[in-house]
Length: 413
Ligand SMILES: Cc1cc2nc3c(=O)[nH]c(=O)nc-3n(C[C@H](O)[C@H](O)[C@H](O)COP(=O)(O)OP(=O)(O)OC[C@H]3O[C@@H](n4cnc5c(N)ncnc54)[C@H](O)[C@@H]3O)c2cc1C
Image (cartoon, rainbow, N blue to C red; front, side, top):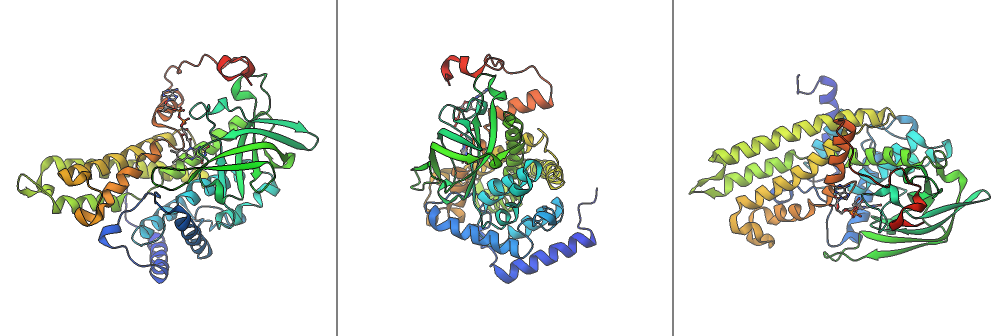
């Protein structure tokens, strides 16, 4: 396989590079590989991320692999990767929410939305509309099919009551995607329905969750007799689990798209600067073999994700294989940043930018790296998917799987 750009790819890369150079500054050594979205002042950062997504969209780089009929460029997943490689060289905001949630909602509506729902896609891709994901509840995270938020039919509307938690960026959201229980008398996966929700509606109360960093990226969301028109239902009544699984696969694909080469390059530079036994660490055989293993795993994930993006761009359902990409990338980032801290010896535990190499960016990336091992499905849940749906291993024990939901003792609906 030839990994060099074809003439068409080289032309696209040149176009992307020249546009980026016209609107942004190159990254400096100290911020050359920031990949996480964690920040103490998220209210200040979020509008910058939104504006950057808009700028990219207007220049034809914000929705590269989406078809032109929904406002995308109609390009390829490879072009998307190429753009990300080039973008990683520039000092621009990390637009994680737009890549994961907004794009995830667009991909979902492409596959399952009505024409009216699909009409929301272009403004969403441009980030004129912000979306949030109303899935997790206090008693239903990994066991997502156990959600207790109720949706009851009343004429042309559905009336929603219940509570969600960990809803990222709901405070900025115009729309949300929601799963709610519409029939508690059937087994838990069979009584769910999927909706889109106008977040400015009466009957929605947000309570921000204060994090240790001081930021409040997450919210509790309460629904008190919220009314949703039936036109905002996605898919059939009681067939919401299928839509949810489809959404989660898209979300995991988008989490797994990360440009890691700058981070690997940063580790190589660090290994040149620090010493082991009086010699530059880069000369140590174990250090070199570790860095080589990072390269190899990064390449494996990159090609897996590319296959998934190609499926998404064709409006196809992404398969369970993407769990491998999401699991590997989340663990790889944590392993790489932990390795970078080890290379710094005792300084690895110091967060003061002036006192340690690369302004402590490895330290802050290490702190941020845990996020992707939880959001979009924890490691353990993903391993179950790989075991059961890819390898065909025996299923995890699920005593409540076939029982009517309202007979499950711990979760009386
Ligand atoms: C950064 C971030 C952003 C998020 N944003 C959103 C959002 O916008 N919207 C939203 O709805 N949710 C969001 N979440 C919530 C996220 O989806 C849940 O945290 C996640 O699904 C885990 O659920 P839980 O926290 O209830 O943990 P639990 O489900 O209680 O899990 C606790 C532990 O038990 C393990 N476990 C559970 N079941 C099994 C099993 N069957 N086998 C083996 N181990 C198991 C888990 O792996 C975990 O280690 C976000 C989370 C994070 C970290």
